[in-house]
Image (cartoon, rainbow, N blue to C red; front, side, top):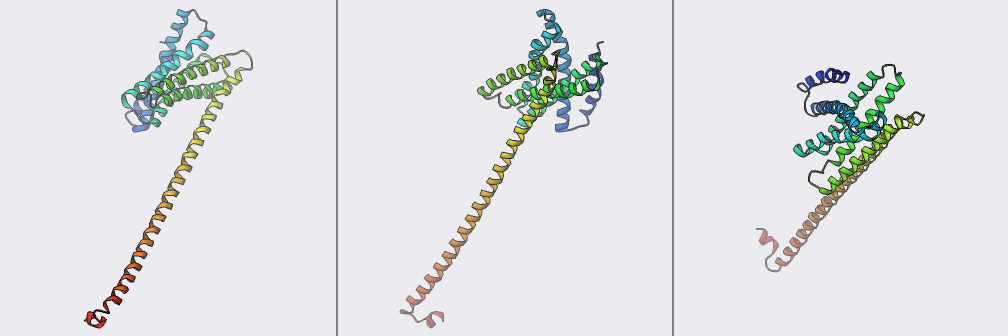
Length: 263
């Protein structure tokens, strides 16, 4: 049995037990994490097969074949999840992140076991760069699938995002496998991408928060205005009743004295 299968079993076995213990979002995250690792195991068999059929070398496979096969296979479980369960947007993004992280976990374990003499710096760079790259790519495709099942433009947009992440993955593999110092750009690229995406998300959250604050403030202002107008109306009505009552009393004095009416 190949080392990658042994690693897969050792990691997945305890995670399967957590599916019976955890609930809701935690269980769902672990399930998709396991699915991501299973996809990495599947990709480890598909990529060498395509490499033999296409007569590609290892480097060409990493740059041209692996990005296509891996990103497409990672997108399939998300597509099935969206198509069948129609989950919320946030659940889709979390599921996509879990698949990407699970994929990167098994892939990194395989690389580290193959390069057992690698130093600590390589392990750290590989762990962060590859993990973030796979997580971000899958999350981007998941973002495009949020409404793709009922809107044709969103479906086209999803395929465009899939093509973009395949290109991004290919550039990343090309950079990190370069024999020169340019490989450091490849290690840094996913981290910069994640930073930019996080900044954009936080900015959107801040804008939504400000809009909500202003909306609440406007609602309070309108409510205050309505209450003030109602109070003015009540006062005007009271003044009108008083004036009308006085006028009524003055008018009827000519017909019947006030003392007789009071009796």
